Image (cartoon, rainbow, N blue to C red; front, side, top):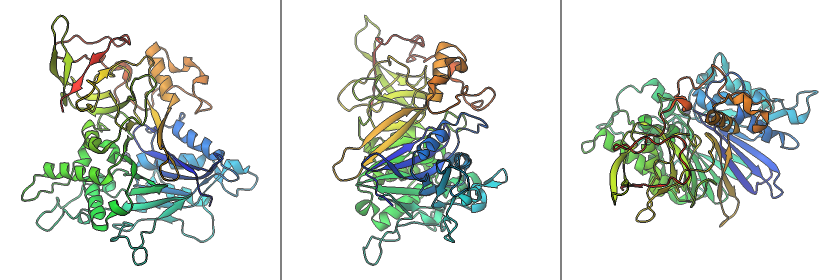
Length: 521
Ligand SMILES: [Zn+2]
């Protein structure tokens, strides 16, 4: 297999779910290999648009001579991680189908999954069975489950006696399993005097088994956590400490995905474990902090949609990653000074911020922010990249995290409306000392909807030309489909100012309206 000169690792905007696609390019910018780590939702739609699937299919069709997915990892069986794989396959015929042009066929060389194989059956179809005809029929078992538990790192690395063998190698990238099929007993924190509740709830259990994988490419690593729960993270911490993974592999972590879409409820759920000295919540907090330290990732990626009952990604979980994140890898063209947006679910009054008093009163006052629990878009120079990118009407309220002792988080409203949804590409060239970058491509379908809302028109009236990702763009969301359970953006209250008696700001404040905000550390 050709060795890539560059990996583009794309975290796709799939709404509430996770879909990542890695393309490996040679020095002439030719796509030589690909990899998929989870590919699910676009939130239960039954019809177009599927911009994430269309984009992956489009890129695969550029691959000569044979569109190929070299490896697929399915972290676990939940629909929001697997349903789009079947859809992607249906865009192609299996490789070797007589009479079909080769660019319309696809081959898949390897698949690894965690959890019970039977759980991958949805509506009577098992996606692993659907996958099989796309694989070479050469007697090799190419669809592989995981041991319970499984890790690549069974003890300290030793070149001769204990080499760490990746589960897949693609164009110079090695994929390792940090943990798969974790159970409470996989975590050192669980001892006989320190036990979780006897029964693991079914939904928790299905997430707990998630593969946490490490992709090692060039001199960088990327970590995909699936829907890891508190127990899964504890198991990761145990493996990392036992085998010395930090010193021998996780040396320069470029990206980690927020566990379980940044879910506050499961990330901080340790199934009721307490110790003689610590409450469950203290333990959970320390568990995540330890995971963050082990990861030491420069960037955090959070794939989630706006689903009321989930409240992903949680601002609290994102904050847990702040201490290790770098800054300014991506600047939104509508913002100054290396800033961009991220959108998360904040609880009411989660932060205290300084705001300038209304003239003629001098000085600053401290207020609680935000005024209500909801998704809010904030500006940041930290490397936090949420696929739910920018909510019109809730923006510009704070600058997080604060730059210690420096700029008083000046917040300028953007001059153009950024997209609601964005794909993030984590670009890793091979070799030491090379410059890595983060690129944004707008999910044009969601942009279209946002623009339509701003103009107060039906999205269809904005025309087909606006969507390069889909040959037949449709209204987004299509009438009667999807997002029904989510707060309609247009129905949101306008950004409610900063409380403390201030009048709500009009939704379209002039760009000149700049307010200084600073979060009290
Ligand atoms: Zn999920």
